[in-house]
Length: 286
Image 1: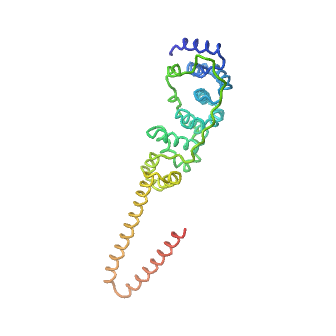
Image 2: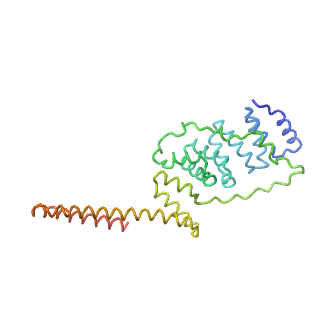
Image 3: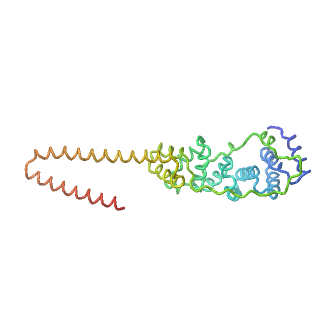
């Protein structure tokens, strides 16, 4: 196990000099890594009183709670921070894990879609969306029994020591940031591509339509929507042509049939044609 004694001594000394210092977050992370979980929790709770929206501390706190299987508490801690940390991939993945652990699949799914929006090549987000996008079909499955490894959320501890957490002058009174407004429709062309790879063209079209409503001047969205809808029209047209060709072929064969049999087939064809018109009217009129 790595020796963190020097860092622990350094951070504790800084906290003794200034109890409001933000070094409580990296110190708590060290405590978590070496298994001093109770000390880490106590330190985080004290520090978050002074810095309630400090993202680094919230992430350590949430990860620690998940590791201790305090799932509901982790969700309760992370949920209010979503609007502030909506562009923080590490936070979003941690929140998605807390949702998944409680079988809140839709919420986890939407969170991973946000990750994919920020980082289109993120494998974890892509795999989750592919697996659970049609979660209605697995709604009754007990997903909380699945193992979810959160160890990949760890960063090297050296990254904490490079942060500017210890100003040389006394800190000014904390002015909390105003929460950022959450985007309504999480959209990326990667999500459209993902739906198309799954063969869910209609979902891709729905996503593009929603995006176009919010960004009516976006030429790329317009082009992709026209392309997909155009494919449907071509497919529809080809279907009609194939049907008419089949009718013509059948008509030629009917000319060679005896008159009585021909009358029966004509009657059957008229009934079939009547059904097609009725069905077409139902579809067109909703």
